[in-house]
Length: 269
Image 1 (tube, rainbow, N blue to C red):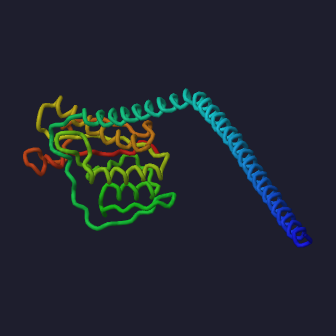
Image 2: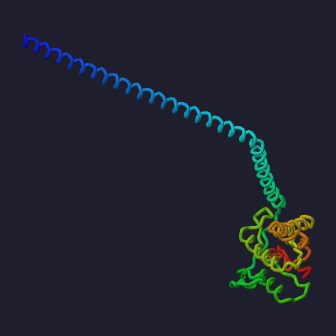
Image 3: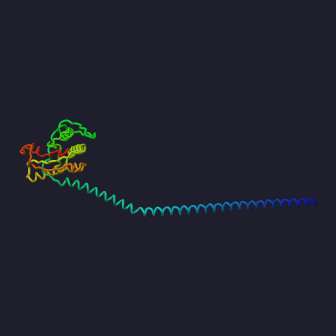
């Protein structure tokens, strides 16, 4: 019986140990479940926070976009005005260039170009203000610059503008002639008190009226180039004398070439 009682006690102890183990296992399972629930709750909370932040970011972006759209709508009239002004300026300056070109091209001529005489050697002349020009020795610009630099007050001297040629069939200057006219512009800029007169001449080919009109157009064309390049219009006058003042016989080509010329007279110092 004592042995049976011990066996019973052992069985009870085993049962108690199993129950304790079971209770511990249940407690552990509950703790694991509770931990999982806590983790899930934290994840849900994190998702909620992220959602709120995303919603706030979207709202901020929409607000910024709305403000940007409002600014663009406010600036749009000014942008349109600026574009219209730019287009108008472009059209205006384009028309101005076309009118300037048309003024020269409209003065059509029928005679041969003004003769260009040969000058030997090249000289560098330093003008008042320090700018230097390179001119052909014995050319018009060389003689004119030296005359002004000498202080000679002789207003009766006539300079033969022998380095000017025009495009065939028009009063437009050739590229080489424009270079010489540019040198003349520099001389006039260096001597701002000087005033001049340009006189056009022709040979005897054609009628007197045609030659007079031709000589006027030639003188005006040279004057217009100088004025367009910045010389004050009131410093330059022009006139034409047709074929009334030849410097050579008109019965040879060489003579007629010499008679087709421009002259420059200093009218004020």
